[in-house]
Length: 284
Image (cartoon, rainbow, N blue to C red; front, side, top):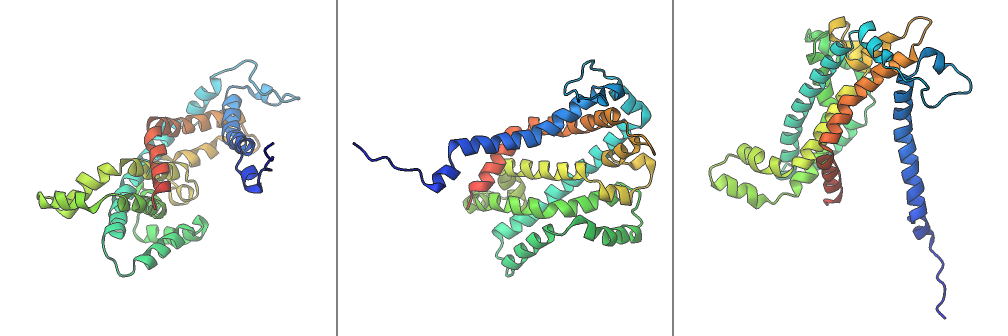
């Protein structure tokens, strides 16, 4: 008879039951809040206050969505958020591609120190940067403009995007760039015509991260823009609450409307994002 081998503690920690439990926790943590917001947006005020709590709406209504657009200029909030997020994402990608390529390809003397500083800067809490950034924007007369948000959002997303792209650029053989430059390309031409297309999954992943960071940001958008016509979505949603009332169904409807663009973006580029995350994780 063969001896029965007891499972090791390591195999128990990486076993299928534990993986299923971890997946269930992640699913509940990520999916339940979104479903709760969606169900709340379809309920009436009266149904929301019923006891015991009703999980699913008994009489689903779209009135809250219509009210979300009529009570506040939600379409304007969406437009401002989209433009600010798009512009900051494009600027972030352009600068991070150049920075990552330089750190991955050029023989920089203080490369290790530069990478350490990039990591250190990415750990700064946003609230500690609020006052300096505000003073800079005021000195440049950029308050109450899109630029006042585009520039800080770019700076905040640059560290993570640069670090992510470095690993992709290091995985591209130098011979491809050399061949392109022999054929007449400049170094920048080889970068944008050869290297960047080959690193498309990483570029898309970095772009999604930068876009979501800009789309969700609240503190800087609240502090740098007091012009009602320039309010972004996170700032605009807080206007739905009154002094003594919180219309949660209407607020939930506005939240759902704000989630939809990001969800569509992720669904469209899902394969590239997953490929970018996995490829970046296995490069060494």
